[in-house]
Image (cartoon, rainbow, N blue to C red):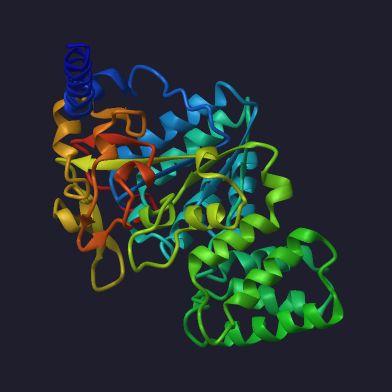
Length: 393
């Protein structure tokens, strides 16, 4: 009889446990925050945020997350998807508030993420500057260089004015026809390759940051382009003594920010930090923004004279990622506002059961679930696509 009672007791408890696991609505209602009304309390030293590129409210969600962190720390390291030289000049902008510099930085950013080179990004950086008046925001760029523009500016401003190097760099900088792309052969690229070799052979770089920039320039001359995420990881480790003492906020594209990797894909930046034992998985907190009923910028339109006239946007799932998460409808029906934060990784989370293909043929690794990739999600609802930065130039 007592064995029968024990079996019934265990059956009841397993049934309760199972019912708690599959009650997705109850879980989400207990683990959501309206980011329009309150802060997400994230007690981790490294926070990563990603969302499909090109939607206005994504910038608003990011600012809300950054504001929350600046309420608990005095200094925040901010790591967007930019190269080291651009990071240097975004710091200059945060200090001097030069809107023309900001516009030029955002135009250069088109070489990295075209859909983010927008009015929304411009307004975000102006808000970050306001926040940095009372707190410290320090920008670091880790990405592979796709534009030489701000490397040229840094070098011409850091070398003496009375030498041939400075004169040549000024010549390139002042020429509106200079092609700064790193992926094609140009006179500038040829000159920089010679200059970098000279710096390396003659030990001309006298400080660590210039050495760091020279190493990143050298990457662009390699016959086989290095993998971006590997460059990011290497750069992070190089700068870790400067970065590691502070709380960090990272904003990059989806495939750089995963804590685990999709099957048959090069390891993401965050994954590489974990695999290289820089951090343990539980020391990094990743957030994915999921767009619903939203649009993203496709491209700006110009007339025959090159003058900006309009832009196109799309609601297509391929660009918005609205079908990225199979259970996104669960988030939609449990939203509190147009920007709602959901914790995904707690025990009994329904997202601990999502396996298999997630989006457009990308498949999770065996024995992993969605919660192994991201700790939380922000549902971004009814967002317009970004307006290109050209609209305010």
